[in-house]
Length: 513
Image 1 (cartoon, rainbow, N blue to C red):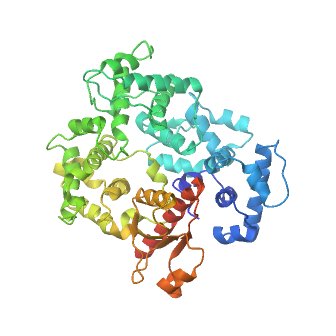
Image 2 (cartoon, rainbow, N blue to C red):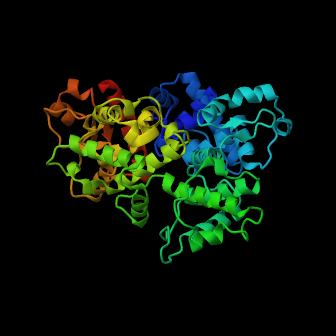
Image 3 (tube, rainbow, N blue to C red):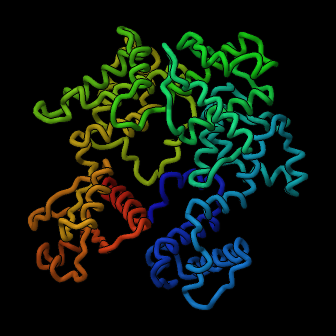
């Protein structure tokens, strides 16, 4: 079973036993509405029977501890009764909180003046043991320019990189489980966000009806670090992107941060503007903020614009001229994101944490195939005089570039597309929902059933394999992943379908590479 997007994040904190428990829980949760056996879980997980059995026992003990008021019946139904509405993310968070390494980094990121000796005393753990357990995430931090102070083990390095690292840590750790800081911190950050986005003449940002968790967390972490005396320094040279707006002047003001000088307030305002420019947009159409970014960054004959527009032109030239992909107007959001990425790598010299670092590493799909090759070829012909440091940043940038470009150029990325044939009764609500879901997955290419062309995956409501075997032949069908689809699918079925399709895609791409 595919571990999911942030499996590598858990690997920094879970020991082997906890990783096994989490893997088995996901399988049990996927099959919660049906009877399952240890044998079935063993087959699907690839673990031994004893590993699966022991993980099952640990999960049941955890659930009993988490929900002591629920009586545990006998039989397979006990898991379904105990687990109730507990989600995979909630159980994952429960396991993270049992990890000493995770609790340590949570402590040092939240505490204004952390001290490793105080932590070890309260946690009843030796420094040598703690040093061993935190080593994986500590190495990751170091790769992003952030270290632990030699005496206190507090994070040490450029403040911008520290804050982005902390944000990445909490976005991944608190995926699907709420808010990491106090209710007061949330309310304050939300008020600041609303104030910064109030409509006004010449406003830098557009009003946003419902900010996402990242929008609010950026401001909460900024306020937390300022309160601890950890400020953005002028030496970090964050650019002044915009003149101070009335909205920004109300948030980054002496009344809000009385201990900060005017130059310090300007640095903090520049940091916030940087964050708004830094994170790529997942929208499908260009909005006012995206246009603002293009207006600010798309200055002719500058390294940022030369890189971003040059890459876009290079990709368009590789397209079939008659295809929709060859039209520049189809890629306006992508063009804004390419400017964002170039801006971030130039400003931070290619070193900063991001969630993409924690993608499952089973296949380095961004390094092989037609689209990855085009990205590599683009870097090979870059001139430093035109794009500055970006000319030498292929190793740092190629994964993020591939991730944002691939959804816009499926034909250039055709060899990484998962070919899916759907054999269901058409014209039903079930088929409508299924096709809508599949069309929303950029790595899926829906192909018509064709006996002469074998797809990678077949999704079908047929309750017998006989029809499929006669159509494709049994020997050829054995090479295809067949997914039996329910006539009345639940929300969990769509989650499991996406998980399965992603895992199969990794296997298919690995074979091609």
